[in-house]
Image (cartoon, rainbow, N blue to C red):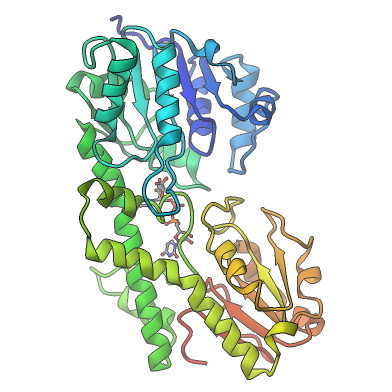
Length: 424
Ligand code: SAJ
């Protein structure tokens, strides 16, 4: 096999695939993006991104204009490429088992298109042992021999929405090859734009590393949320306590909130333990605690409505923020959506507003007019600077429930409740 990297096909042009395709294209490679959503293909080819991310519009326009990036939904156009990078989702089924159907279908598409000597990269987060299984599937479908006729690597993405283009360049990367040569080829490929450190290992270690990172974060957030429950018992502000505890040089407590959303943290701990087929106490319990947070926030709201004698069935609730995290338009597994779902049948009306996502009303004023309570469900920066005195004048009952530690000092004249704010 020749050493130069030729043409690259990126399978799945979502939050990871599109930025990755853009980076390779702007580094001088010919990149074709395969995506089954035709409207997305059309938009990308016209130089416009279908996701919100800093810098994406300029970088995509540049990639398309240079002729290095094109999208297609026609699988015959990705035939015979040197590199295939798979960036499809690996969500959970309703019973919390991994749904690998998107990955399997992407691997089948690649198997149909690839040639001898192709490098297949899986960037998707997958349960341990999946890359090996997928290499066997390719062997079955092509008759090629893994490690001899094709190379395969798990190269997990590690970027955070909102910082994708910086983190793609500066984060360190792990390349888990099914053979050492596979990892080496992938390292050489990504070196064109990655300035972070590169580490090579085998594909199962790499799969576990990726899942451990997000499980670490999930378990730590669950601990912070449990501290929040305690703060309500003891009548203190958990954020004051956390700030003080974090002055210890070896303590870094996470941030309690209305819940943990996104495409990664709510799912990855399940992927980590699933192939082991055993019950893992701490990891599973952390997931349960984090999943319970929208309901904890619902309890705060309902107790406030009761204190203010607002009958539930008449209550008008304004929910600010639909995205799973601040300054993003991403609503995947958003705790805000779970929260709305949990209250909608009990209260009179739910109005939702989000500056990035939209909502069922078009402005904050419209959301709070004659409302009985405002609930902050996403930590968008814009919500930090709201004029509560002015908004309060529009409201019928002044209740403010903060699920995101947006409000430091409860505004005057409001009944204020917040996750971890046990002091009021
Ligand atoms: N959250 C809290 N408290 C915290 C931190 C986060 O409630 O202290 C919530 C957020 O509001 C959000 C959810 O957790 O709803 C997840 O947000 P996040 O900022 O922790 O992470 P993601 O899902 O945007 O990105 C994570 C990152 N992983 C780690 O930081 C270990 C990112 O680097 C990964 O690339 C990404 O998962 C992924 O794709 O796996």
